[in-house]
Length: 379
Image 1 (tube, rainbow, N blue to C red):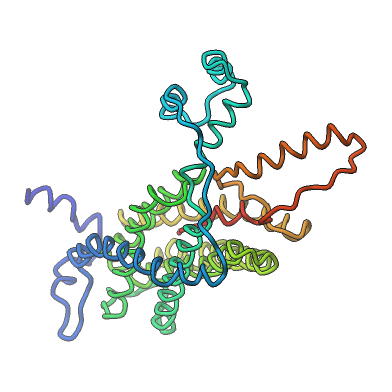
Image 2: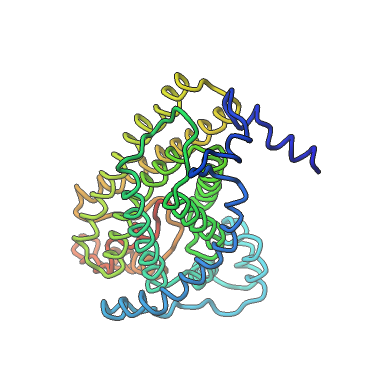
């Protein structure tokens, strides 16, 4: 066991030349350096964060939703059918051939089978009230932790010449962020399901690894900057989502455009050209590359590639919001709305009865409901 621990915590991997663990374990009087065992409290704290979230949503978010007249609503449920239920457990969207086979087996119309699967997928989806509470919780956390971080970033230098001492403020910030991201990792399996589930999972995993890595490797200033940059745009996003759920269309559209701008500045300008440049170029000149240095930069570049992918999706939605006057459906959202699809069906039937195209388009309840079902983040 000791040999395994010695291999894992090898100084040649984790630390730059001429720096040892002994220096970090025995700092000068009045100073303290981070230790890996200090982060063990983050896992139980993550469950504490989940508990606080539940209380916040019940005692704060739901009353706010009631004031804004946001109701949970009742989703239409598919009629019980053992045959279709067995198929649904293996695939939620069967291929057309299989749908035709089920249609013959049950003596149902093909459209009726398709409708059953559509309703079955939707009946487990969270309501607008649930999504409002989730967004309000995230907004509260991001705003609080971002404000806390700014207080300690005023005098922070991005790169370092020597091991950085650990202040109580930095420790609290790291523990809070790490516990929050662990809670996001756990709750991802119960929160709103999206097409980018795997990408978000990789994102959370890379973020947790980066936070832990920068702490253990005593790169506190870099880690603090990375987390702060990510939190900045998320605040605006959650505000836009709350406006969407409350059906304040103009505020939602404006908020999403502002979010797109902030996202571009923080994650496609500041992050690559300031943070990554400092870690990749300036730190090379100061301490030179070493093994864990390559790992750190690799993780930073993984996050940057995700930023580029997300901004591509965000830009498409923002352009539609600017030229069409409303935020369109988020391509990352995997939420379906049976009511919307029913509306489409009604439109088609009216088209048949009014071939001259004089029919009126149905009024949409919420022009932005696709956008807010997506969301970036979590980092």
